[in-house]
Length: 100
Image 1 (cartoon, rainbow, N blue to C red):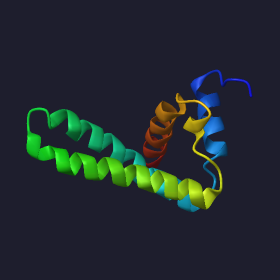
Image 2: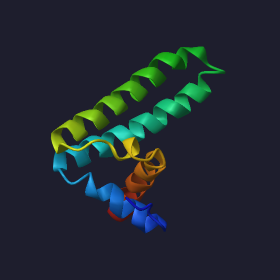
Image 3: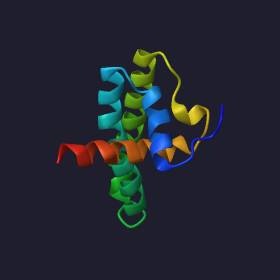
Image 4: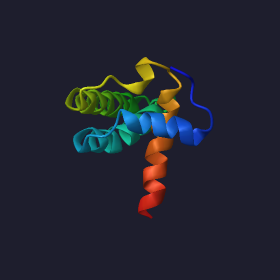
C-alpha cells in the first residue's frame, strides 16, 4: 500500500479504519487520556505521586483504543505504520477544532 503524502492524506487513511461511531467515541476519549497520561508521567519525574494517575490514564486510554478497534473489526492503523500514532493525535485535534 503506498504511503500517504500530505497530512490530509494521512488523516483520510486514518479515517478509513475509524468509521464505526463506537470506535470514534473510544478514540475521542482515549487519545486525550493517553496524552494526559504521558504528560503526567513526565511531571511524575518531579512529583512521584503522579505515577499512578499517569499509568491509569495511559492504560485506560489504550484500552479504549483497542475496544474501539475490536468493535470496528479493523486493526489499529499504527500496526501498518507507527507514524499513524501521530496521525491519531492530529485526527483528535482536527475534531476538536471543528467543534469550536
